[in-house]
Length: 281
Image 1 (tube, rainbow, N blue to C red):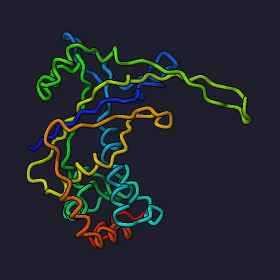
Image 2: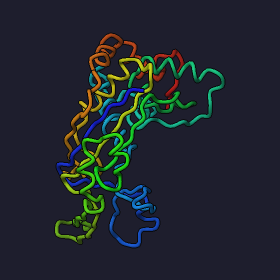
Image 3: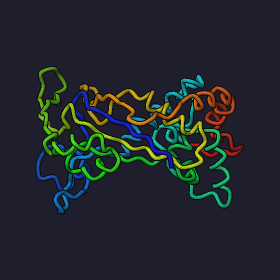
Image 4: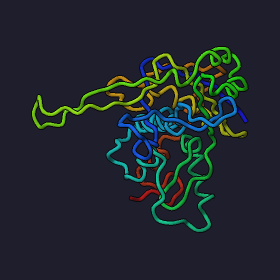
């Protein structure tokens, strides 16, 4: 395995809603995302940034935008299934393809390094397992064990901060009337404070092709620096710093240049370079 380490620092508060909101939330406040962990030997639900959200914001969407821009493809010329695959991972809709999904899956992964890195689903099967796994932690006491193990240079900082002390809340108004000056509705949501730090570990399978490794670097390079919600209000702006050797992106860029015609044709006709229509709808 090859591992890469990235540090994020929130430059503005981050809004990242918890899935418990609306289920067992006893207040009208939109709660911040949490996950179960242990503190002093007890189970607690500590503030957390979802790895799936980070994966989409920092890698999948930037790589999709970069691919279409590089190939000169208008998103409006693509099927909904291809757009869903590139931007959100796709969705199976027509049952399984008997027998040849593994062969087809590996064919498309060779041509599209971003799908090799992140995986996804076409109309009739799930693409063979993605090369990337990632984990994220707040630099805080509640996550001291992984910080000490994987990011020891930040352990002293983590010991001094509780994740709960990094959570505040903001209240805004939303207009509900048809005309200016109409009814105003108050809404409140929790945020992770500016200055909070998040560490991310990216783990790449052994024997991963270099263009796929390069896709990781290209995705982070193209990312707009925002995570979470309320981006229209400036929430979620971060800075990123590699705290280990960064993956090289040149092989990914070269792969796109050398295979531009095949890449373009594969997303336009939905075959993804396999000779069979995999994303039709």
